[in-house]
Length: 123
Ligand SMILES: [Zn+2]
Ligand SMILES: [Zn+2]
Figure (cartoon, protein in one colour):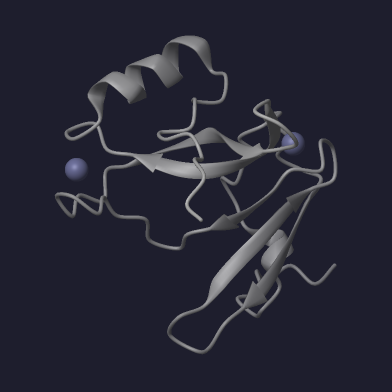
């Protein structure tokens, strides 16, 4: 019956947080990392096991806009041979000004975006 909202370090009570993978909004857990002032929260979805870093204040690296949208992007890693396999996903932020096409694509399909660049042999 302790009714007062606790603004303590309990990140399980973040509101308006939704798993970008499966839209789960309840079975989420968070963990704080980092130094004070540079803290990040790693959120893990108990429903689909996706985990992502929640940027507390995402901004567009190009124009500095904070009106960015959360989207998912596939992480493709090069496995044996030349075959590419999707290993996992990460959360990216799309800027409506700088990346309208990718954002429109994300809104339309709601499926993870393709990686912006495929891994190549760098060695
Ligand atoms: Zn999920
Ligand atoms: Zn931008």
